[in-house]
Each structure stands twice: as structure tokens, then as C-alpha cells.
Length: 251
Ligand SMILES: C[S@@+](CC[C@H](N)C(=O)[O-])C[C@H]1O[C@@H](n2cnc3c(N)ncnc32)[C@H](O)[C@@H]1O
Image (cartoon, rainbow, N blue to C red; front, side, top):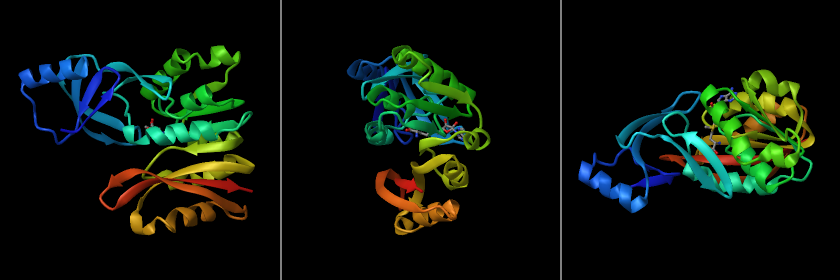
């Protein structure tokens, strides 16, 4: 049976068979959790999960990862275990004094580890979904980010990044979103400083992996020069499709 543990909630794979109450109670004990749910799918722009509660009634929890605390309600916002390494990789890449625009901040998936493990000057964390924004604000406080910095190191912004990101400028632009991320490349390139870096995510058929993402970046960059620094596969997304991230410096 496939499962993942988020805080004190066990999430069963959508294909796992319905368990008897006796089995579920046993799973509660074995995994030391309060609630067991099944996530059927994650859909729409907000990446809202569709959740069936199998046992227990509390879907809000605090999950610990890479030394950071993330409060979330698994029935309202998603959590991808497959992105764990990428969250940590980015946190370590950031240079002291960087200004960052996190275009799809969610509950702080990237912003919190960056602020926790590096010394950025400022992170503008933009999120359009009020539920995610609520937890983003919570997580900034829970991890004492702004209190420890002594100023608003992370600024949470409830807005569509397409509207706001062009008004900002950054050394690094995080594009932690899938499926339609390329529609936001023009905005990211508008926002990134000369010599700054975009971290562009794409869900791409494996056979197009070595061409399509780079072509899309170059097209949006127009007259600006692009230097591809690195490409990493984050996870398998669906049969024949991978979720990748391209680090590209834009001059
Ligand atoms: C769920 S996160 C992706 C997962 C994350 N990268 C991780 O490490 O697990 C994507 C977020 O982008 C937000 N979003 C989608 N469109 C947006 C937009 N136009 N402006 C700002 N946020 C947006 C969604 O609401 C969602 O919270």
C-alpha cells in the first residue's frame, strides 16, 4: 500500500483499497497519526486536493521538513513529497543578499526553507489562493522568519503573480508551478535582473526534455541572452512525462 505521512496525517494512495475500520485503527497506531485520508486528485489553478476522510476528523497539521515547519490543511492545499529535494536544493543555492520573487508561493514551500537556510535580503511570496496565503502567513510566523530577521524578510502578497511580478525586480525568480508555467515566462523574464536566475518548472514529455523547455525560455527572453546553468528532473509526473526544473541565467 502506498502512503505518505504529513505531520500527524496519513495520506493513502488514491488506488489503495478501502480499509476496514479495524485496519484503519491499526494504521493509526502503527504510524502514530490522528487522521487517515485518501487524496483522489489535485485539480485546478489552486491545485486543490479532493480528499476523502477515512478515519479521524482533523485535516490540519504541522509537517516538519528540512528543519522547517509547515502548517497546512491537507483537504485545502496540496503537499508534494516528490518536491522535497528541490525545496532543499533551492534553499542552499540562494546567495546572501539575494532578492527573490516566488511567483507561486503556496504555503511557503520554497520561501520558508530559503529564509530558514540562507540569508536572502527579501522574498516576495506571491500566492493567489486565499487558503494557501493564510497558511503562508502562518508559516512565516511559525518559523519566526521575520522576527529573527528583524524586518519583513518574507513579504506575503495575495495576488495573481501575472499582475504583480512585473512591478518587482529580483535576482532570482522561482516558478514552482506545473502544466501551464510557460504562460508565465514573459512575466518572470520581465521581473529578473540583468544576470539574475529563473528557476523554470515544466512538465514535459521525456522525448521533448532536451528541447522544448529551452526553446520556450529563449522565445520569452527575446533579445536578452540566456545561459542554461542546470536542469534537474524533480520527479516522474505521469507515464512518459517528467517534472523538470531549468535554472537559467538571463542577461
Ligand atoms: C501548490 S504550489 C506548487 C507546489 C510547490 N512548488 C511544492 O514545492 O510542492 C503552486 C501554487 O501556485 C498558486 N498559483 C497558481 N496560479 C497563480 C498565480 N497566477 N499567481 C500566484 N499564485 C498562483 C496556486 O494557488 C498554488 O498554491
